[in-house]
Amino acid sequence: MADARPTAPTAPAGAPVPPTPPVPLSALLARDDLALRQLAGPTGPDVVIHWAHTSEMADPFPYLLGGELLLTAGVQFPDAPFPDTFFDSYVARVVAAGGAALGFGLAPVHDSVPDALVTACATHGLPLLEVPPGTTFSGVARAVWQLMAQARLAELRRVTEAQQSLAAAAAHADPVPSVLRRLAQRLGGHAVLYGPDGTGIAAAGRAPAPAVTEALRKLATVVRPATPPGQAQTGQAPPGQAQTSQAPTGQAPTGQAPSGKPPTAPAGPAPARPASATDTADGVHLSAYALGSGEGFVLGVAAGRREGGDHTIASVGAVLLSLLTGEHHSGAGAARSSALVRLLLGATPEEVAPLLDTGDGRGDGTSGGERIVVHARPDRQTPDAVAAAALGTALGTPLVDLDPDGEVVRLLVPAGRGPAPVPGWTLGVSAPAGAGGWPAADAQAARALARARATRVPLVRHGARPGLSELVPETAARAHAQALLAPLAAQPALTDTLRTWLSLHGSWDRTAVALGVHRNTVRQRVARAALLLGADLDDPDVRMELWFALRHS
Image (cartoon, rainbow, N blue to C red; front, side, top):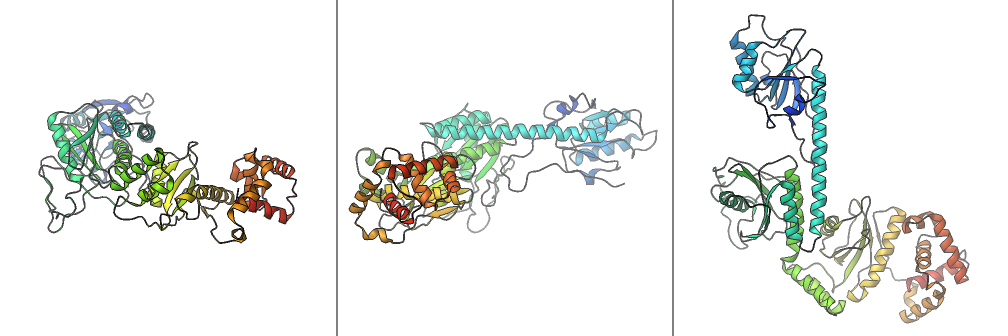
């Protein structure tokens, strides 16, 4: 008889989602439509199943993966009288294969569950369910998948709400304590931030017992960089630490080992420390996450339970804490903070710009202090602080600003690092400019972004090629622009619409897209501007003169 083995639904490889939670056996027993009855074995919320599988094999061991509710009608069982040793051996093999429970279907083969099978399941601690004649095995399996889907949805909702809550906490005035408090609440445990020297900087949630606290502190050393710069690595982990594993780039690896079994160090140089590690102490689940700032900060979590989505939630907290700690504890971060303070106290951009080029000892590729202004909008969702910081990382700059309206991210990028297209974002890039020219570069980037969105391309750069306008002195050009555009001075919406419309060669549709208004609104604004200016916008000479003026306004 062929043995069909259904597999549990899984997410695509690499998908950033928590694993599917198992289904409590009690939830399956509570289904009135199934009318299942437990005859033997343990009960309670700790008895869970991961999927359902039907087999009439005399020895199902080779066909089980573990965690199954094994369904059988007893076709393979011998005729009465049943040898007691047969059922004992059968149940022992199911338990050895990791089976979670056994479901025995009544009719058409057997009218009742054999007493010897009930005894064997009770002896080996295997839950035994009676499946009534009106309940099909496919109906039981479908109920398992439905309960798994419900549990999966609930877990995804829990993780999503936790992510949003942590991101909101990171925007508080005291972001690090706020993130730790929210993380401890979401995980139902204790969260602590360790400094580079291993001392606790901040903590939240009920503190565990001293022995658990010490075990968590030791676990943090597993993921912390082993040696300060300039010292040799020994590759020997501290005794009594958990085993860990190294994951591919972009993933947060986890490791687990029985407590008290120290990992052995391989010969030669020590391998890179893992990004995360787990252990258990006195029944409390411990986790440690190295923060990506590279400064030696570690997030430690101690919780009484460990659910499928907890690792995902803790990883989000680790990412946020990496952003919060990495910026303010480095030389470059201190220099940028100093620049901000000086600006608030009245210094000019030209005076503080040199501070942006110092602090980390590596340089940033600037050319005489010049930088590029980038305006960016995500293609789908509204950007938040975490997405803006991630974009800054992709473009190689920590100088990131999320505008008050929350729709555009502005960045100052070193002139030597020409931005490339970033998947999921539309970028407008200015020409390189010194500190005194950053306001003009900001306007260039805004116009470039509008053009990129209107033309549906991922990146548009402001044209830096010399033109005829450079033959006119800047002061004269500005005076001419001010006089020509004076009728529009009180109505900036008309000026912006005219500028965008001319830059897009008079396209009503693309101008409407770039400005986020209806095409009829564009027509009305352009017609109103032409009337106030007394200009014929169908004349190319008039368009050229207006474009010259708008560029210098």
